[in-house]
Length: 419
Ligand code: AMP
Ligand code: GLY
Image 1 (cartoon, helix red, strand yellow):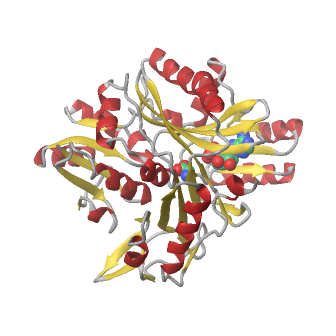
Image 2 (cartoon, rainbow, N blue to C red):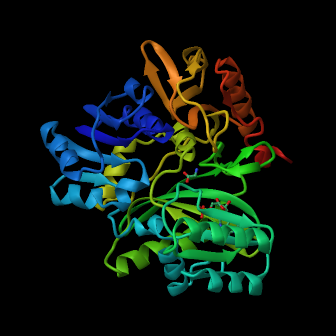
């Protein structure tokens, strides 16, 4: 079958890499894609916000299945519109995508169905928000209620810091709704499940590094590196998470007539009192997807279709027992201001190393040269029997890449290797 994959990052390069291995695939189109996805499919220019244009392209190219990478088209209802047009797609409906689109929606759902999460209150005014912070004390977490690419969250160590965050959010949007919640302590992990609206199957776990610099310091980013599996997430904790968090969520969405289909990415804090939900995302994580795809033995297209078709019962996601690790190479300055268009050399040499894969996240071709085209630019990924070996191989590959304007963390997976 012909498949259309939407998105342009490292996640989509990794998805194209695994979709291309599918026995069911005839031709893969990626919109807009990047120089990495061009290795596995045909990149095309398509305005994803124009749903009619996407539908028209699907009809013209006889696309039988659309895989949506990022959250924005899901929250905008692209899957609903495709399905109305008779085109099958992977991902949740607009109503179900509220699990990522609105933090307040998730918090209310958790409280209605007693799903473990941080205690919270939501506010639409500065005074109310500050009074709550005063009453609760620090540390405390201030969040914008909406999509902000991971940048709408402040984990405030002091009351003053929380006030600053509240003032900042209302200054940039006076009608904002903000969520203020208890600061959870523990190890943070990412857990991925597939749902077909009814059945739930685990896809695997990973750990990401959100802060820009070594030692988990510096500003929050979209993620600077990841590894899978997450050793802290034991089979017992996975079982508990499925029973206490994931299955009740999928059942609640079904009960509300907004069944959840797609990949459900739970950001969890493994607290002393057990796993608690930090947030949901309605897509694969980036860069977590890259490490999951390195480990995947199953036919990805087959399982994504089963999710869309309500046929996940009896399906199993076969992940290699090996460990995968990815290092994000970012442009100097990221997540703040950075330069684009700087030349990157030797990616092919790094990619040629055994059990290494260089995923492109923010690159483009300029003539025959590869140049940077974003904040997070390359994902240096490796797979090996242990996290330590995968890490050594990934750093070996990173050293080969010649990009003077890039930087990367030197301590990916330090938590997993600290003992
Ligand atoms: P979110 O966008 O909700 O994932 O938040 C971004 C990051 O902030 C998370 O990945 C956590 O590291 C941190 N965070 C969010 N909420 C909490 C919380 N209640 N307690 C501790 N850390 C949090
Ligand atoms: N790496 C975290 C995310 O994709 O949201």
